[in-house]
Length: 265
Length: 333
Image (cartoon, rainbow over all chains, first blue to last red; front, top):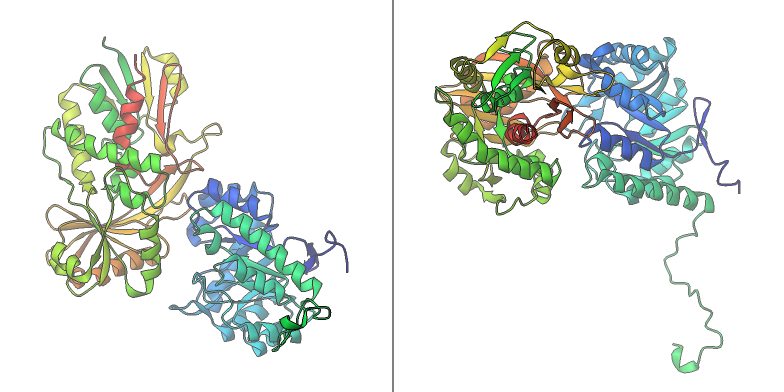
């Protein structure tokens, strides 16, 4: 087993050690956001750019995020078409000077479910334009395979719909994707509510989790941020330690030899 | 003792400060715009006085300050030459089925303020409070201590009253507080510039808000209705003459440009889903404003020699300004 310090994962060649990616929306104030980000130990913060925040308009808020010194992963939240997503990705590249883009393309407004067809199309176009694409996708194996074939080194399947806090709705699907795409960096994105959800994702062998509402919407975001950091560490240690096999029949951990006969059945 | 005092900025805090000080001192008001102060956040606001609802998102001390401010408003309005609409009949908070979870967490996080607290309502109780909402919602919260004022009427009436009191006005004057202090012989300068005070030393940011004003003769709500919304609280605030203010969005941006279609759709569809009578309402205007905020979203009253500053009221202008202005004025010895 490699040492704790050398345990990292890759995002397009960049080695990342913190397995918690944190969002920057919905906090009670920018000050609480900054404290929560620090408490999370995250190295990557996601930001959602809106048209009205381009160039100078959003400068003060972006400066607060840039001041954290973390790597910025812009997303295309709220986009419904391939063209919208590409325009926003281009704006993000200019504002944040990064070729990383978390590609979010919504196909259904009620559960904010990604549109798999448009997602694949936009991914191909963005790769051709020189972007490094991190697609937010559903937990569908074939979609994930197609995205990987298109060149994605990182995939971000959902745990549950955005903002629901329901945790991993389909651990079986997530586990299958992990097993079938062993060389792809996998990050569970969206739907987490509790630290135990994040822990479970890491136990399944996912490289990291990305979350926002679970921390920003907590009664005390900074404390919840600590909790998620601990949970992600726990899950990762558990994965590396390899869990004992599950059994249907009890196996005593104390040997019965030497036990008085009236205690035995 | 009577002083020569400059009030810089003629938005909400500037007006309240000038009203208070002009009873006793010689006041000169400086404003970058005209008497309308079109750039001021208080002009665009829904002008809610909602300490309980805001207690969900802000610290207890600010919510209590809001409670104190509500008590001050009737006395402030009583000194004006014209009547300004002020109401304290509570707020009704409702949620659509898909936002029930948000309503539950809102209820859990309401902080009791002294003897004031929220009361959970059934659908029947909602229809008793607001008969026109019968059958629309089966769960809600009533926040009895809350209120609102008509900010447009307040802006007009405060200006008229101050004119009568011989306050001198210097409009279209973008002044630098430090040099004003050197050039003029003011005993005190009260800096009420809001975002106009932004500088390297004063780390303010603007938080964009968009607000729609409607004329809706077919809608008869008697008190503000707050609708749970995934991104920002939306108020439907009834003002006199069947006018309704629907607001506000909250976007981390200093773009003062016209409202977007997305924001307009969100605000108007929120209103329409609460009351279908809004379908035939007339859109009087859609305005955009920038709320001045510090990074912790808390207001500050500060003093450097004879310059006293009030700033960073964020989304709590009408809720907190009377108390903050009283705090600032108490520093004048």
